[in-house]
Image (cartoon, rainbow, N blue to C red; front, top):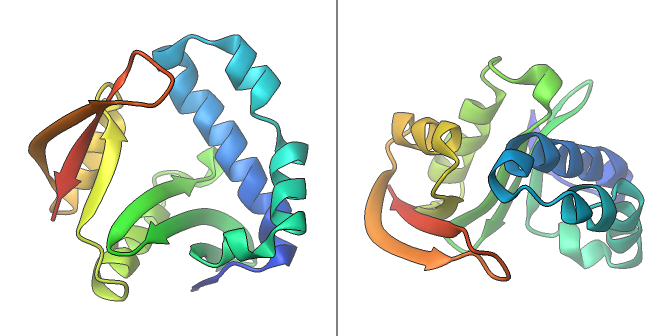
Length: 147
């Protein structure tokens, strides 16, 4: 089931975000100071607990417990992550279909070097627009994709 996130989901959302980002982005950014120093589960959980409004635009895939999350801003997918233990089970596909069909999402930005994510989005009807910009504070580019 896909539902709005609540404060009770904060720790699972933080776990998914932190560990998935480490697994997927460490090889791209090669910055252990960020991967293991700045990005911390506790810090993110505390941020959600202290500011529950930050969960307002987050949806979770809940199948006994939270296995994936989706962050939507307007008609843009900001984040879509599935716990690595549950990848390739259709959860990401269900989350993106929800974003498209129920929330009318049409755009997203993805790291140019994150070829797995780009392929996933292409499989679900998104295409590169040609727009490209530096990811803030890095030397890596993000590219826009549109449905």
